[in-house]
Image (cartoon, rainbow, N blue to C red; front, side, top):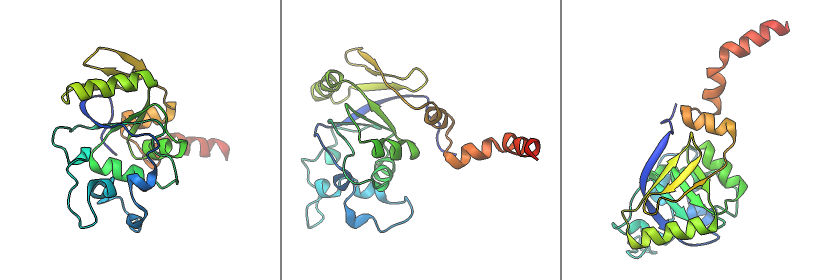
Length: 196
């Protein structure tokens, strides 16, 4: 079981770039591992570090001004190849939520499978959230999974977001697909008995 998701209030890390693809999220050369450990260290590796391995101070993850469990990305976040490692890297870094006005479908599903909540908002809401963070890096957003709302605490503006009912249940209860099946073991066994 993973940490249950209910209401998350956090500062945000802004990445106002469109069309961020999975190769930028986690470069292909890091895909050799088969466990999820260590991927957060290489999140946005080629943007965070130069070829000699030195931090690039201008990149947002290296800027101590910004921190939090919410990554705010531009439109079309997670496009490109279907690598689940991109979601592993985002989760491994410590993000619980990614906000964008559009996600690639495969990325959205991979994120949910790794207990990262992808929140789709309008372009207007996204622009306002970026503006609030730019004006005050301590700006918080509240992501309320039960109500399916996100609120910009600086302006008080809220929007609703969509989530699959099953995935919402799994996030709220800290269950992956196997945990979910095991939690229904009694029902499955009862059905098997009835079907004999």
